[in-house]
Image 1 (cartoon, rainbow, N blue to C red):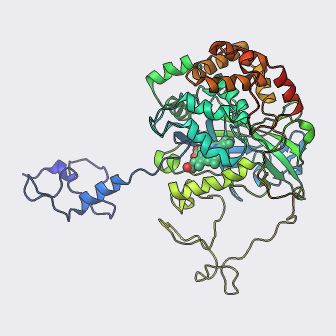
Image 2 (image 1 turned 135 degrees about the horizontal axis):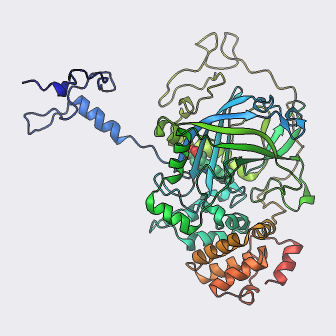
Image 3 (image 1 turned 180 degrees about the vertical axis):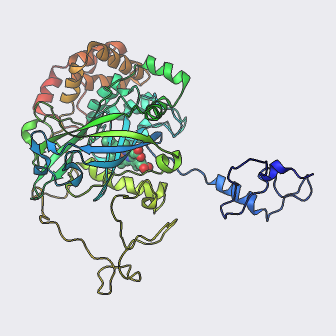
Length: 527
Ligand code: HEM
């Protein structure tokens, strides 16, 4: 008797028929082709070999950092002003100009250090990456939730990440390795004071802030430039978790933040953030006491008030995790007219790294994937072919001309902007040097003093728990740094570790450090 259910012929069953990737119907998805019911199998078994060999290739390399994350879609709506003034005085970027103008966005939130399936309760910075699909092409704003970073020169990035990732022998994340590196990296103190405070574990993605972190520029019609920093403020409020809260959540599930975001969007409770911008004249600013191109610093809000320029609403979840979250690709080089880079030494390094890793991780034609395409602008290039080419983007009048210049058709250059030259003139010698104004401790100390009592207690406790797993010289150097930041912080952490200011006061500055006069004075009076 014929088994009708095997053939999908059950009366009333309207479901679509399974096929292979050549469009051939699959009549039996349960049994390979074999000689007799007990085998052996045959090699011409195309359907089976296709199925297994595709499965064998289902994974791409996970991101080297920010591997765990989730994407959602929505829109950005511009306010059209910067404070009282029209925004056009500062930037000509089209997406900001008209009040109420909406631009499609994709946002990916992430943790940094853990792998693709790791816990979302980790004490770890969070990524906040926004892709704006503007009419002038895509703009990516790739930031984090803590406003600053561990280092200020991109050449140190592989080292800081190696220290934070699991040990290459034991594959355990080790406080001793982390603080070994950080204790030799005084610019990391500001980030550490944030990361080991309750802010280091956001309650979820909907209740966290975002920051561009690096300094960018805005360019207006006249070619005038300003330095800018970006801030995302959640309308839902900011919430964090203590270690105990996080342990309780992690005991139940690893992906609570992804679930929280997706459930909120599914029930129509669309999360919203306001975009605020700080602005500064495009100059060196020695009067500030810190370098505005240093991503270990924030700009004081009383001097540079963050002004709202628009809002972001997320109202749609991905329909496929792999296509839209795993393959989405952001980069700091992805800017539109009216926005520009600054000379921030991290930013330039990042700008190379993102598209470089994406050519490896996703493939050379990653920009042809729907989630990465500049879907609201026309793309026409002479970049051709390569692995997984999906279409040809040329729209010139002569398809034979895949080069430029040509008098026989093909693509032409866009008209030059009115003001090609912009920003200050820079002269200097080729060199390898730290920035002159490092000021590594002041803002870290101020941050501690701004904390409520319970936050200070939590920070001190977290430092003690982690540092007590470190070698004594690492502990001593960290206490020295923390005393340089703020007496109370250094004294309390030292007390928890059994280290007094007396024990560390004779430590010399690190060989890589040049202390300011104020810092030398502080060092002379440690504790
Ligand atoms: C992801 C490099 C600093 C935020 C990544 C990735 C790389 C990378 C290679 C993986 C990208 C991918 O596979 O698609 C670097 C380098 C840095 C740096 C070399 C310093 C020189 C920073 C800083 C921030 C940041 C300072 C925060 C402001 C992010 C975010 C992602 C990411 C949010 C995830 C993007 C996504 O969701 O796909 N970074 N990074 N990175 N980075 Fe950085």
